[in-house]
Image (cartoon, rainbow, N blue to C red):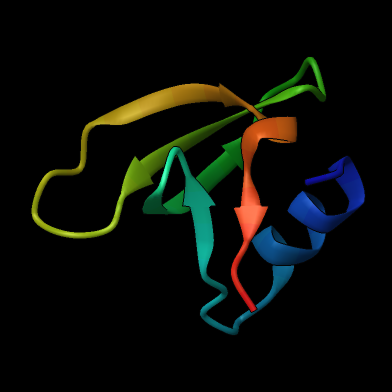
Length: 60
């Protein structure tokens, strides 16, 4: 995924399905470096992790 798309998803009110390592995640925020984002798994476990935005995929 690219930086502009991450920004669009964060500013959207729609629920957009994003995948990281085969799991559906929420993007919490874009980090200051512009290369990473903080995400958490959808569901009861809300453990947050920092990932490279290039590793995020949008499911259509």
